[in-house]
Each structure stands twice: as structure tokens, then as C-alpha cells.
Image (cartoon, rainbow, N blue to C red; front, side):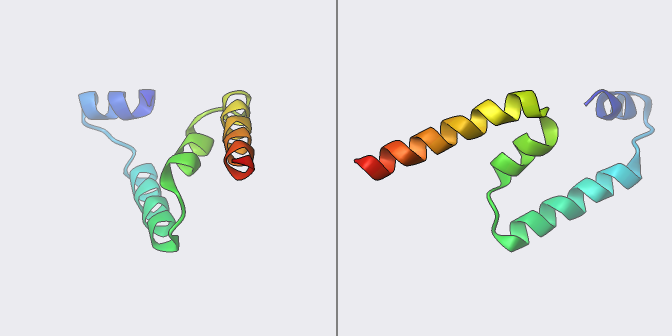
Length: 66
């Protein structure tokens, strides 16, 4: 995020990284995958992603029990 903010403020965005992100997002959309979990997995470190995943698994189990 720091790189993006500095690139916008200084007028020198790393365009190669921007286009890689755009291409990745398009592929994810075309494959029909859920975008938010993938974005969280890419952006957050594993120490924060793992509890989110555990919460999702607990929710799945609770919903199947009902």
C-alpha cells in the first residue's frame, strides 16, 4: 500500500505491478472464484489469515449442523 500511495503522490506508479494485479483479478473473476477470501489471503500475513479461515470453517460446520 505504501508503494501505491507514494506512486500516486509522486506520479511514478510501478505500472508492471499494477498490470499484474489487474490480470490476476481478471483471472480470478473469470474462474468464478470468491474474490474477497483470495484478496485477504494475498494481502494479509498468515497469522491474520488463519483465524479468518478457522472462523469460516466453524461457520460452515455450524450451518451444516442446523
